[in-house]
Image (cartoon, rainbow, N blue to C red):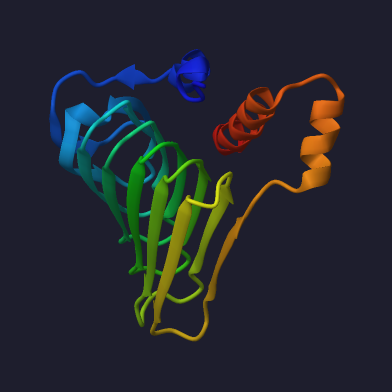
Length: 238
């Protein structure tokens, strides 16, 4: 079953493919990037005032991959970052977003499909250091066999970051008793005039949904693929 690769045309649409190893990049104009995880290990992106960055990080069929990303957002800049991983034995990704300017917006989405003994560790840090800044994190995982997913989400809101809005959610679907999902939120809030929320879900697709799909002539592997594709496409569409 291939989830990510089946939708590469949709994922790539309008994005420039980064083929050289990337460590630092200043973004001064609206930019769309597509970066395989092999081409990025420890990179810093600095978004200038009013700039928009749309970036996709992809990890597929890797034995071991480590990615460290830092995004610095100036006034009114906007970040949309999507991380997609599938069939990775060990994928360790850390993302730090620093909202330095007022009205800066950060939107981070992650999708991981793991099977066999695949594993992903996702560490997210959202630091609000300006008024009226906004951040959103959504992590979705589909785990089968003995796959493991770890999610560590940290929200930091400084004393000066009044009217900030920060959200995190971690949603996990387990298709076997051997699969494991770990979600650990961590909130540090130094200003009372803010909005901050987090949530996590772990469970299986309900029996009625699976029965409905299979009653329409679909076998179990096809049902699982449709559920996984729906989870990933919902991240890309929103």
